[in-house]
Length: 131
Image (cartoon, rainbow, N blue to C red; front, side, top):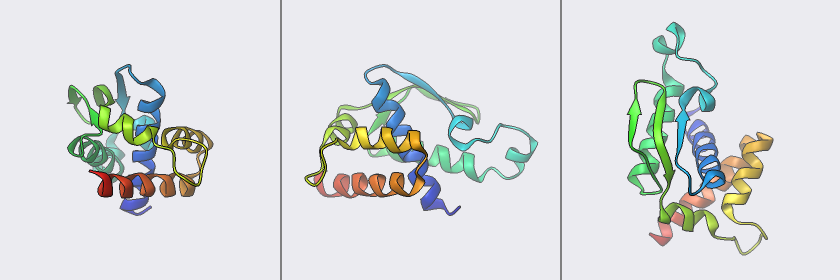
């Protein structure tokens, strides 16, 4: 998969999980999102893990999430949505009856990567225009 496709999948799944758990802080495990355990193969070709952590860094840089620390190559500790992230995910598109957060949860569960990518693209477009 290309970088943008993986970014959209990771972004959608991360935001979906944090939206579903809000306001609790959760620990995120990279292998739960990349489906790759930290082993010799992953260390030799770390593309998915690098993209997962780059996605986390992007979401933090855009002030959509906060976390206390990254542990080794696997964990993000005490992660949650910010008010900005929650407000963005609570918005309801004019053409739909559900919030972006609800849509992310639905498509993250059904593993529809195409639908997840569309929703993430719309969220990022909205983020770029609104903030």
